[in-house]
Length: 239
Image 1 (tube, rainbow, N blue to C red):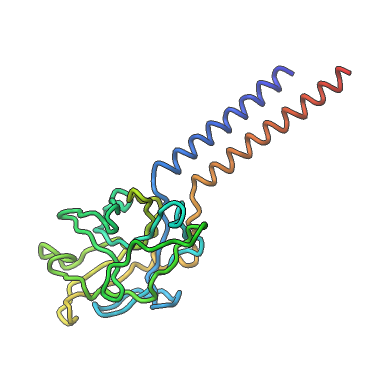
Image 2 (image 1 turned 90 degrees about the vertical axis):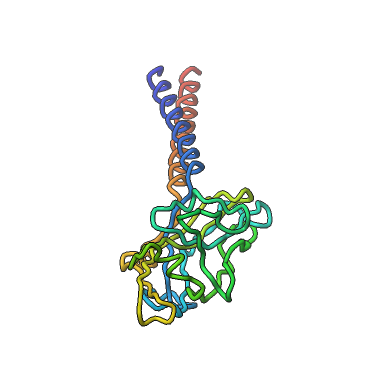
C-alpha cells in the first residue's frame, strides 16, 4: 500500500511540475503561427507581384489574442521587419512598432494608413477587422527595402497581438522577398516562398503550452482518482 501511495504521489508531483513548466513556457514567449499572402478578399494564395499589386492576408480560423480589447486591452497590429528580427522583441506600446533604428520598422498599409491598434472580438479575443486589400505602394526601395545597394532582401511580415503594455503575445507571419526592378513603376517587385503558401492547408496556432497544461491536468486528475479508489478499497477492507 505504501508503494502505491508513493507512486501516486510521484504522479501528482510530476503533473504539478509539468503544469508549472507549461505555464512558464506559455508565458515566457509569444505564440508563433503562419500567415499567408492571398488575393484580396480570398483564400487563394498570391505568390508574387509588383509594387502596385494589391494583396490580402490570411490567418488561421482560430487566430485570437490571449485576451480581448473590451476587458483586457489587447489589440492587433500589422508588422514587417527585416529577416531575423523577432516580432516578440518589439514594443507596440505607442500603437505602432517601436523604432528599430538601422533595422527599420514597417507594417502593412491599407487605404493609405498603417494597419494597427485594431480591436479584437469581445470576450474571445478573435482577430477581426482586417482589411480585405493591402498595398506596398508607400514603400521606398532605396531607403527602406533595398538599402546599401542590395538587389534583394527578405522581410518577415504579418499580424500580431499585443497587450496593454505593448508586449507581443501572439503573431502570425510569412516571408516576403523584395527585388529591385527596372520596369516596375516604383522600382521593386515581391514574391513569397512556395513553402509559406502551404500554411492555409496545414497551419494551426494552437499553443504548445496549452497542450502541456492539458496533459499535466490529466495526470493530476488520474492521480487523485486512483488515490480515492485506493482509499475506498482500504476503508472497505478495514470494515
